[in-house]
Structures are given as C-alpha cells and as structure tokens.
Amino acid sequence: MGLFLIVGIVVLIGVAAVLFIVLKKQSKHKKLLKYFQNEYLNILRVDALNRSIVSPLDPGTSSSGPRKILVQVKEKSELIEKTYLLDMKSPWVIGRKPGDNAICIIGDKTVSSVHCMLKAQDNKLYLVDMGSKNSTLYVPAKGPYSKSGVCLPQKGAQQLTTGDSFIVGFTSFQVTIYDSSIGII
Image 1 (tube, rainbow, N blue to C red):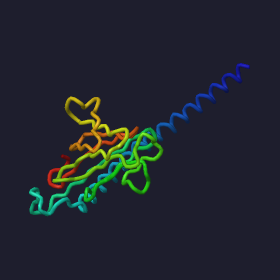
Image 2 (image 1 turned 60 degrees about the horizontal axis):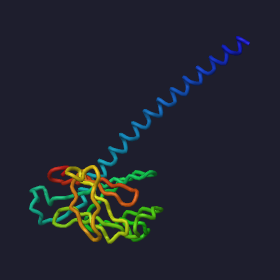
Image 3 (image 1 turned 120 degrees about the vertical axis):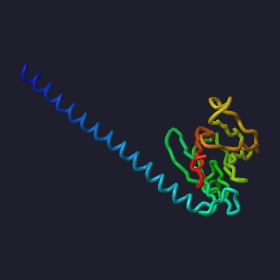
Image 4 (image 1 turned 180 degrees about the vertical axis):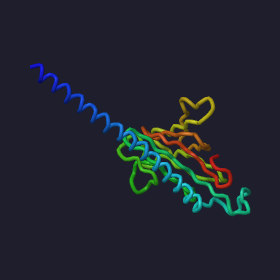
C-alpha cells in the first residue's frame, strides 16, 4: 500500500511539473504575441498616416508635406477587442445594422441600427449621436465627468481628444489621435 502511495505522489509531482512548464511557455507565448501585435499595429499606423491626408491647405503643413491625422479606436466588449485605424476622410458610422455601418455591433439590442458616428471637421474629431434610442455615453479623459461620463443628447455632438472614451450599448471605445507633425495629440 505504501509503495502505491509513493508512486502516486511521484506521478502527481511529475504531472504538476509538466503542467507548470506548459503554463510558463503559454505565458511567454502570450507576451510574445502581444508584442508582435503591438509592433504590427505600429506599422499599420505609419502606413495609414502616410495615406490619410486631412487637408493639403492645413496650417500645420510643413516642408515635408501636408499634415496627416489618423484616429485609432479600440473597441472593447465582453467577447472581443478590436482596433480600428480611421483615416477620417469620410464619417465612420457605428450601429447594429450590417452593411450600413463602418463599425457594426451585432447582437446588442441596446444599440440602434445607426447609433452614432465619428467625423472630422476643421481638423478636429467629433462624436455625433445619430438620434439613438438609448443614447451614447461620452467619457472624457479628464474633467468632472471622467469617472461616470455624460450622455450625449440625441443628435448632439462632442469633440474628442486622445484618451476620451465613449460607450455604445455594452461596448466601449477608446480614442487615440495621431498627427504626422507632432505624434499623439
């Protein structure tokens, strides 16, 4: 009986050691995957900046060419995390209806078919509610509403800056704005 107990303990220790090694490798793999995803995103940002011209007559135009602006929007929900690189040449509509929206949130009944949009105007980025039934929540990076946010009125607009977030239904979005002449703004 004692021999079986010793053999069982040795087997359990061996299994635990193998499990520990496998989990450690998976952790390294996840870190490496995250690193390469971030590097790939940086390459995409540079490429998108090279292609996204806001205005050739922009006062920020330098000798190297027109000022270029790119918006990165991170979508986070319970199931997914996506990053969008928006060139802002045309408005980006967010809603539940496939085909009509640049960013489609399927399966969330609290999201209107056409809920809100991101649009650039005068080299500024705006979040505009499109008359949504359950409104769009704006969460500024700084200020009195930075913890709770504020509901945009129907058809209301709010200027966005880097670090600002907004919530559509159960999905949150965070905004980062890149400028070719100064970097993140």
